[in-house]
Length: 503
Image (cartoon, rainbow, N blue to C red; front, side, top):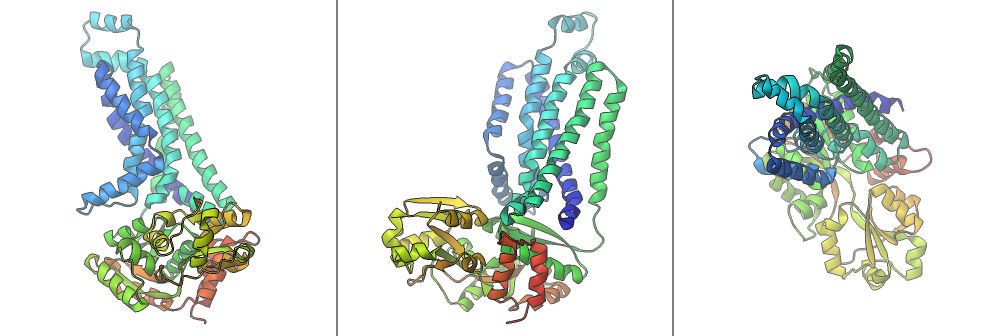
């Protein structure tokens, strides 16, 4: 638990500064727009309507939309990390602020406004001396709501590579490390509660015209931001960004890479929970420096190849594909993590299923449980085309829950991973692929263009090439995924490092 708690301050600092930046920009947009819209009903309807429509978009989808938009902009604009999260959270914060500014100004007593005009106040004086102080409590209520929403939604920033307390939540859910999930949730909730309490003091001070609560609230906010900024002071050593997708093996391998680079004198940070396409684009764009991918994934998904070529042909093709960006394949790690359809042994025996051709015969009576990506991937289209698979139902799960669905009977077949220790532990049968619809999936270590030319970094990572046998990877994966005696990815990484290079 101590390693989890050690991550909380840094992630909370990232989380707070991201939410604060988004809230600040939302204020800069919503306040003047609200002032203009308060006396213009058509503008108010359009502004609130657009902000309300944005609010109906799920937060995860809004974050996902910003990534391809920034990718299309190009010209060195980072498409991963802070910027897409900042943009999405800013849009999410607009509605409560805009709506309350308009409501606060429209709710003023008309007699007060007429009295201000009667004594000769200009429009600017009336706004500064009369309207703004009277509307301030209503406006602050909207800002408080926006702050709580933004802090909560910032946990989703992990999916686009922005560090946040969502790192603990997402990785904890995947590895079923519930203390880690609870730590992330409690820390996020604590940030929201403290922020709301500080802004409540500001609101109280404005409503009652009292300076002590007003300045106390402002001081708490300023102190929180100052502490967060101090916690994120840049290290003097070069920082290497290590990417990871959203399953246990990736978390473990990211720690193995991180340990080797730390020992070589680099500071490292992790961007975890990335989708396959996002991770590769991030490497090619320089937003991620190092990560492990799988040859079949790049071959089928990024290169749009449907043929099952020999391993060396695939690696040579991937190197050519990455060359324009400067990124390179440092080499295969020594094991394969292939997609494979798997069933419980007793179920497969009862149905007479030994390979995918047999499965096609009984598939209309079965339910397929797949990981979150598989059903939209070229590999799935290749398998269905080669064997004519047509299941009665398909359901998508996070990888850990997919295995539980198979064990609990909610799924009859799953899209398993060949290096997963749960295949043996759960006594599963991996169905053969006699028509070779699925390509090979060698785990390959990728390095971005800038660091591929760094001899010290390459020297630190090269001992991993060909050094991780599949048997060791399965054991390490199962250390994280099993129910009893569960270990964290960092612990499994240390175990795997000690056995690297052994047969």
